[in-house]
Picture (cartoon, rainbow, N blue to C red):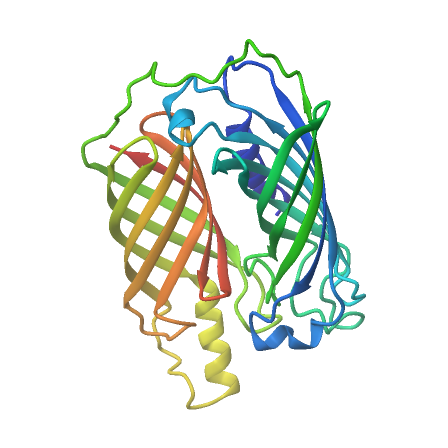
Length: 364
């Protein structure tokens, strides 16, 4: 298990630190947030009690437009961040996470949007004997996503700035181990920022690189895999395999559109079918097929070699009615070359995660 989580972290952080020969200008910021845990499904209602609090510490590295995608995204920052979250609820415990993130700027760089992906550690996961109420986390290790939307002022006094806004923090183990209802926290944020190495000679480049970029239609073949556990506790973790074939069209430096088909083999569903047929006679046909076939459409934000794919799928072959017929997927990708790429994604049905997927693909 640890190797797969390290791969997820490495995929995020390697892409962030792969920027080459940029001027050195960076900042650090620290935020405090006070929020509420959202009732995203009925299973977590008993866990919504006190108001969670959290702290975010981040390192941000500026970009200066050496590559045109940096110009097209209005010179974002890349960096790493650390989040501590206390639910003020002994059942849920506390979370500590490490993330790779990007900062995007709007309205003359007064508004900041940050998105971060990483892994977190929970101090008090589900235990049948000692902590059976924690249906949110079935394991210590969790996948996590967080977002910040802040108004900020730089250099109010000798490099010191202030920020305020809202934050959203999601934790889930992606059904790696049951139970896995996950948590979502929305909060108000207040922070301070300090800029280092400010140098007036380091100017952002504009217009010295090609302003348009597009590619012909490419064909992708992608294999994903991993292990997960179904909705019924104690059925064990089982491998799954996903075979995807799709065409994509890169429109510009920022956006790529995708359309294709996917074939799913999930052995945890096979185990679930066997269990339901034995435990609840007549509810499920014991001969139900556990395989699925779907059509998929997607979009990919490209940031150089790094990418953020989002996809929507519909099962055209769905013999065993697991969750809903529609699924979504979001994650990170890294292009090792023009043809070879790796992905780490979370596949969900509404708010219920089915699996954390790791894959390797070929783009021709």
